[in-house]
Length: 271
Image 1 (cartoon, rainbow, N blue to C red):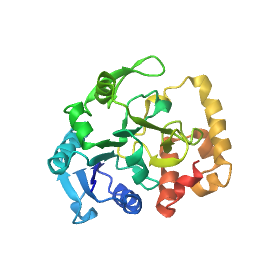
Image 2: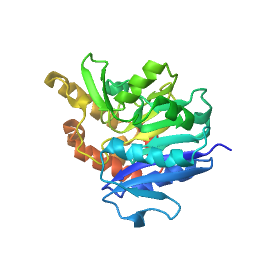
Image 3: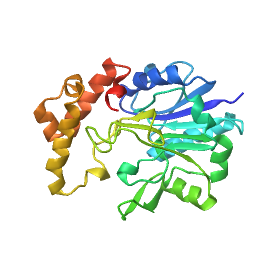
């Protein structure tokens, strides 16, 4: 029987552990093992059957270490799920194992990215091995805006292209919202929600997509307010009109964290 190996990196923010577990428990309906790379988080936050690997290495090296551990135990037809600590499954994982490709991943086109993003990449063990070693190392590509971008996942994109590996992209469903990159819901063909990615859950809240011309800032603020003012979103998020107009990343982040802690189906408000 196919086995799933769930690989996640948790860094200094223990609040993501129970949140992520809530959705893994609900939607990972196949036999699986969970592997966590941890730094700055006490082991008491995890369950006895969850495999812990403390590490102070770089982010992509932590994922590399987890994949080595999983591949030592995996059969060729098993699957590896790379998932960020602040990313959650929103539906049963079984259909993702039946897309017809051996690699399924989030593609953040809204950030100018073409590579499978480590926030959620599902790949068959045999496919991951055939791609090579250290697949998550940084690499450079030309983004959709025409400028070079260097990021974790770039080398993986190079290998996918060089080997002509078919893969299934999950693109953003909620193209309108509080932020053009953070708080994203992704689905197959950009339709049915499959994955939520909070974004920057364990680091400074800065993104390439924030580098917009000053003339675009007022328009973005009004669009953010208009979105938040529909179907009770602003009230649910605890945001004032001023909060929406200013768009302070930490204020928006606090509102979303509070909502997701209170409501398991918080993501439905985003789409």
